[in-house]
Image 1 (spheres, rainbow, N blue to C red):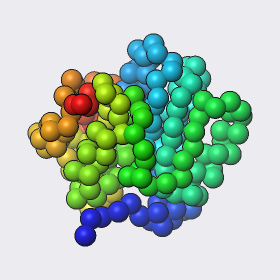
Image 2 (cartoon, helix red, strand yellow):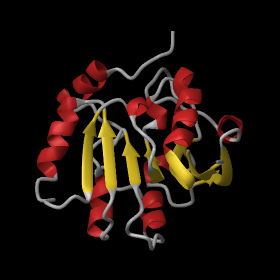
Image 3 (cartoon, rainbow, N blue to C red):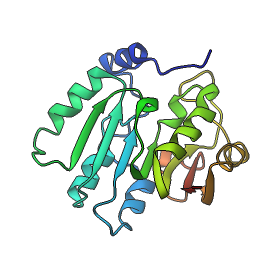
Length: 197
């Protein structure tokens, strides 16, 4: 039987504020990538969005079509309150399983969603990413380049990721991050991949 996302588990993590992955703001690699984008109308998805720091940064930069999704109602309610100042339609907040999303995105920003999934779900993740991206759409973000005891988070390495993504994506960049935050230096990989369609 295929594994599914566990809403109760993530609700409990947020209730207990057991969010060791939360760095308190947008990560440097994603910030610097976003700073290079010029099309403010891109349809951008942030899956497993956590506290949605990337969404706040995008909004502050004038992006107009951002979707964040998380399976935890506890978290989504908290995000809704923290983004109550957004009164236009530039931010869409969805409480659902990522795997239920419909196609229509130009860019997916990956930040600690992939590593939160059981490795048995990784093939499904890649297929779903390819499905929801528009032709020419990109998956951009950060993956761990290390192993962990137990999980989540679940680790991996560049060779594993290349094999995983290659059937559905043209890999433009898959390299060690040069601008990780200090505690993660040397243990993160930056990925930029264009969907094959």
